[in-house]
Amino acid sequence: MLQSLAKIYLHIVFSTKNRIPMISEEIRAKAQAYFVKVGANLGSFTEEIFIMPDHIHWLCTLPRTITIADLVKNVKISSSIKYKELIHHHFEWQKGYGAFSVSQSKLDTVKKYIQNQQKHHQKIDFQTEYRRFLEEYHIEFDEKYVWD
Image (cartoon, rainbow, N blue to C red; front, side, top):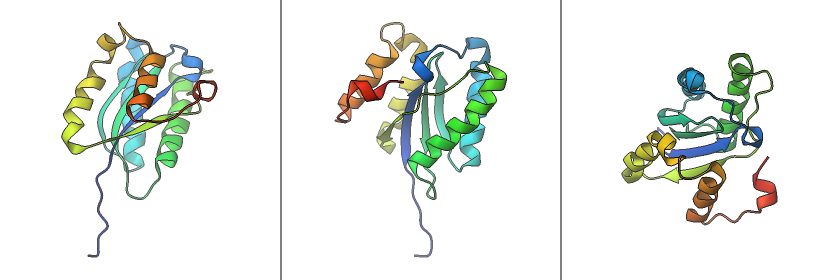
């Protein structure tokens, strides 16, 4: 076999610095489009994306030639630069992130979850949501290092 082939789906979640709500509804579509473009330039295909005022949910593929850490680092750096122009000169993403594997059979479920973010967050805040992901994936964490 001469080719190396892979199809890995990730649900990536992270917040704005200190979870400050900076992304307004008026700018959300443009912010999402830019994020998708940056991901595509890195070889990642976006299956679904939704940017809330204080955090992002990004369902994407992991390119075969890049690590998860490099993918997230590169989209954060590029989007931060753009969002400083587009949104506010003090815009920042938090330092950390969550990356959760998604099986092919669960893609539609995760897509619907991401599409339903506005309704979902009428009942639950980002920190509670994120803790639930960490618990569901059995990821041990220390509260003092999760938030910035």
